Image (cartoon, rainbow over all chains, first blue to last red; front, side, top):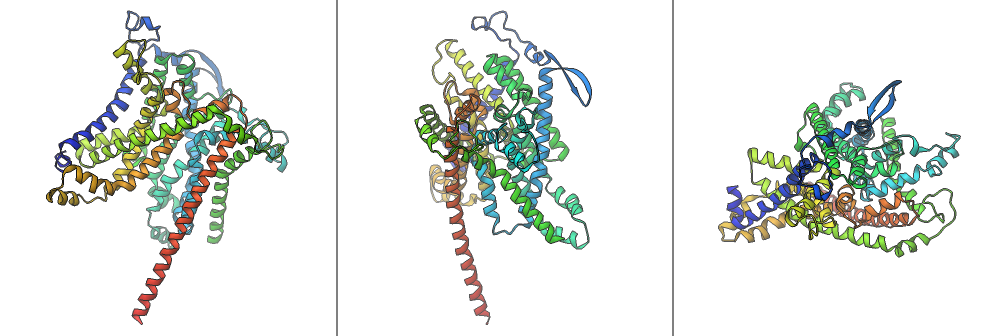
Length: 308
Length: 290
């Protein structure tokens, strides 16, 4: 702090501190505290706000456990509150998306970092970036066209003869959502892993090869451990973006593929019950934070390694 | 065997690129299909009707203008706040630094839905406390200005990271020297520190601009009745659409492609010049040795 005062003087230092304070306090901390406070209050008509009925309670949170639905998974039937079910599936499918994104991105990241000719690498990266610049809503929309019942994917598969009848892709539960999320977020996995592998000394790989290690052992013992920070940060990004996505599930979802963010959206926009929406939003924030913390602890990475 | 694996890797890369780029081709193609549904099959003939319909779509044009306003505002505010944050972080140390840094970074990981709802609730509530529940004045009503604030809350962190990386290569001795020679603090900032940071600030502004254009979650909850392009396209997709959206997508992809090609040509030319210089240097060196 003294350092800053000496270099930039009182006026500039205070201005900079105020700017940062405005950001962190007014745009981050206070809104989240308000969200938390609001989530404990009942949804009341305007005249009752501040009145005797305006008391704190856990009612909004308990709404998560309302309304059981019967489901069966792996042949076991059970009854589960519909919002818990939605939340569980959102987490589960976000994890699935993360795993598939990793499986798709890792080979390409390795190829880009270690095999490809350095001269053609910038061109490859440029090509990869093009879909990233086209906005997310249009990327989801593109898959909406492709997966349509009379769309190009069915036409192609029919022409090749893989299937005999067109498939209703967007009615197959979460299929559309998973495909859309993978397409939208796979690059957020690719670039962190690429950065991590790039810093690996190629001599290590060559030495292992000379000593007769098979290719899978080189990856398992050398490349994967080295790229762990990249994998962790890519996974956290993809997971958080998927779980928090509202666009892709809304556009590519079927009638049976409710995403937790859609539930929040419905409380907020359709039911106009901002208090319950706050409670649900807070649940999402809390459990995602816990999930990410556990993942970071397991992989032994720090927050500062993520979002590089 | 090694050769085989290399070929396999190449094939995989090509497949990956097809997976990434084919949807864009399909989407562009549908803009020219003379069919009321946005698709490329069945192909009903070539048309440019959707482009003229797009230009006549007043709501889309308003949404487009809104998007630009929001993006520019977000870029300006996020750059100012993010740069200040980077400088502040850079001159603190120890526990304060860890705490500040952690708090800033964590904003990137907050789901957009949460940011949108919390921003909306805070500002409308604050208006209610200050002015009563009825007739709250601007800025305490929903609208695009709240979208700007909500977006800044996490985009500023991205700018901060970019500027902070650039700050690592800054030599603080230059500032000391300038101060010793009698420069004012403002001069030091404007003439020495900021010029060094300009590349990062420029990159930060670009990232902020594009992130803002992309944003849906925050905007969806804070926008009030106003549209941005993303929100508008979203509402069209849900409401059953005509290929005017494809016409829009085609134009956006074309702009992206043209910019990418210009960048690539530039890069190749620079690389060629570099290679020529290196070759020349090597020849000169060899001549010296002989």
